[in-house]
Length: 129
Image (cartoon, rainbow, N blue to C red; front, side):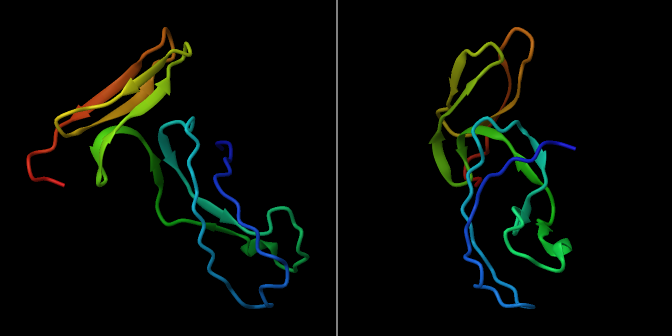
């Protein structure tokens, strides 16, 4: 099992939720810059520190439908243009990636031995979004 990474927290004062009721909470989260590329399960957990006494703790975790993919991209994608990406390789050397002329790139992996990166470059046809 992979390590759990907390990417957001929201505090709801005890007593704001009546017994047998539910509540929708929205939360903006930020994925850590050093989060490895990969596929993840997104979980939401309430009462993680057991601060609220309850009879059923089996309903405190919800899992998002489907997987969440973390990718390192640069260039033009998702309605953004000219995005630059700075990463450090396994030796600690920083590299900044960027593209001009459209399209986008994806850093697929950081090379473990000797440093460097595996990169894919993709050009979208004119008029594609």
